[in-house]
Structure formats: structure tokens, C-alpha cells
Amino acid sequence: MVDAGVTWTDERVELLKKLWSDGLSASQIASELGNVTRNAVIGKVHRLGLSGRAKDKTDATAARPRKAPRAPSAPAPIAPAVRNNVVIAPIPRTPVVEEASEVLADVDMAIPMSERVTIMDLRESMCRWPMGDPTKPEFRFCGARSITGLPYCNHHASVAYQPVADRRRERKVVRA
DNA sequence: CCCTGATTCGC
DNA sequence: GCGAATCAGG
Image (cartoon, rainbow, N blue to C red; front, top):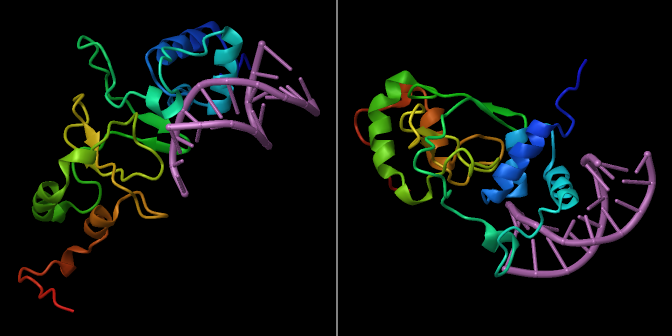
């Protein structure tokens, strides 16, 4: 084999430089490159003498831009991405139950608009409920705290795994 | 507890 | 040169 991408090729180094100077964290870059840990990225960054970045104030979390300062001319195409072992492919609409579309409407309304995240900010412990058109840059994930062992947050899990038959037209009484 | 980068040190 | 383990911190 040539090299299984486990080497710092020129291309990977360039990408590393780009992403690093772009403000992405080491772990994010590692996920982007694939087959490397954040330690590897950090190590390489230091070896390249790229450390520090734009570090005026406190580093670490403070140097982590929440909104990606991406150029408006860079739409950032949504392609199937791999984070760790999880492959996230574009999903047309509902991830599970098709008949739940009615419910989904309500669900979408019930979701706090605040914590939605892009794929870059999506972490293992976050809800992967897709929102919006995967082909558009505006595509987001729910991003709320996911239930341990499940890809969704409490709210979305209840919807995703709810059998259609369970959906009563009549509303339940919510009293204890 | 989640995350961040920095450094060390065996390979 | 490389990166896991560790350190130091927000």
C-alpha cells in the first residue's frame, strides 16, 4: 500500500495549517483529518511551530470561536462526514418513523432554537437529530445533550423510538 | 464533567 | 518525527 493516510503528507499538513489558522480546535481538526487524535494534531502543530495562533487572552476554550468565521463565499458543502467511528450521512427528512411527520412538526416547534449546532460542533454526547435541508449550509443538528447510549436527546429519542401505534389522537392526561 | 492547548518522553 | 500520556488550565 502507498500510505493509508496515517502519514503527514503535504496535503494533510496544509489542511492542518488551514484549519488551525482558521480557528478550529485540535480535536475538530483531528476529526476532520481522520485517523488522527487531537494529540497528534497538537504535536504536529507544535513541531511546525504553529502554536499560539491568535492568542492574546486566555487560550484553550477562550480561543475557540463559536461561530465559524468562514468566508461568505465558502458555502462549505455538506458531505458525509466521519467523526470517530460514527458516519453521519445526509438524511432526507425523518430519521426513523415516517408517520411521525405530524409529530415532527410539533417537535420542531418545541425545540429550543438556541443550541442547534453544525456538524463541526456536533460531539459524541450531542443529539444528532437532523434539522433542515442537509444540502444547505444552514443544516443543523439538535445538539442537545444526548441520552447515554442513544444518538438523540431525551426529547427526540421519545419521538424517534415511539411506535406509530402508540400515537393516540386523544391527548393523554399528564397527571401523575 | 465537558472541553482546551502544552509538554514530556518512549518509540 | 511521531503521538499517547500527562499536565495545566477554563
